[in-house]
Image (cartoon, rainbow, N blue to C red):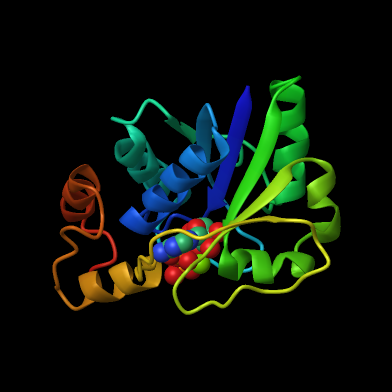
Length: 188
Ligand code: ATP
Ligand code: MG
C-alpha cells in the first residue's frame, strides 16, 4: 500500500488542501491519503476546537474514497508532533510505503519541527507548490510537486467569516453548512 499522510491544523479545511492531496494521489499513485488533524500544533494555537476541525475534515473527505479523516493526533495528549505521528503510522501500517505531504510553506519550516531533519527516515517527504511560497532549498530530501495554484488559506477563510463574507466555493459545501450551523469564526 502506498499511503499518504497530510497533516494540518485544518482551521478550517479548504479546497486548496483537497486539491493538493488529490494531486499527490495522482502524481504518486497513492492508494489513500489520511488527513491528520493536529489537535495541538506546537507552533500555533488554532481558533476552532480540535473536534470541530476534525468534524470538518470528515465532512470534506466523506465522498472521496481515496481520502480518510484520521484521529491519530486527536487521541494523543500533548503537542502534536509529526515525528510521533509518522512513528505510530509505521506501527499501524506495517509494510506500507509512507508519504508525508506538506505545502511549500510547511516544508520550508521543517527544520524547526521536532526531529524535523529525521522525518525522511520515516516517510518519503512530498512538498506541493503553494502560491506566494517559492520552492525552498533545504538539506532534506523531498519530492517536489507542482500543482495548480490555489491561493486560499484557512486564515483567509477565517477572515472572511469574521467579516460576514461568503466562503462558498472556497470550502466544500458540507463544510460551509457546518461553519454556518456552529457559527465558527464569526464575531459573537
Ligand atoms: P493557516 O492560514 O491557518 O496557516 P493553511 O491554509 O496554511 O492555514 P494549514 O492547516 O496550516 O492550512 O496547512 C496544512 C498543510 O496544507 C500545510 O502543509 C500547508 O502548506 C498545506 N496547504 C494549505 N493550503 C494550501 C494551498 N492553497 N496550496 C497548497 N498547499 C496548501
Ligand atoms: Mg498554514
